[in-house]
Image 1 (spheres, rainbow, N blue to C red):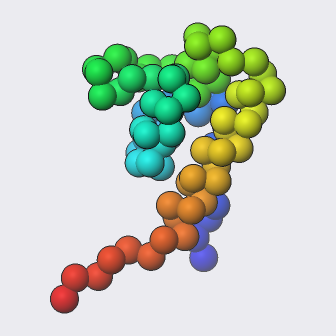
Image 2: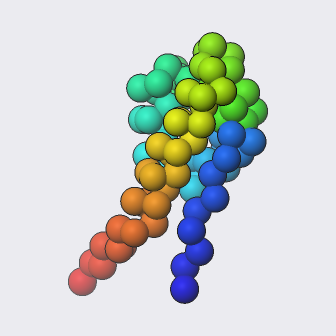
Length: 82
């Protein structure tokens, strides 16, 4: 049985991007990191969101939405090429 992804505001962004590739687009839409522009992605989700002036409540929403993305990513079966 596959375990559920664990995402928290203390998760390193590098680890998040390995777990949920779609998080890049989500973070860019929130204005948290401009990964495409080469801005460093060091630190945690919470730290990055605080740098952009998100409140604790808004950070909780971001974490919940990232968790939903992660769960969706893990539910999608891989494509099999024949």
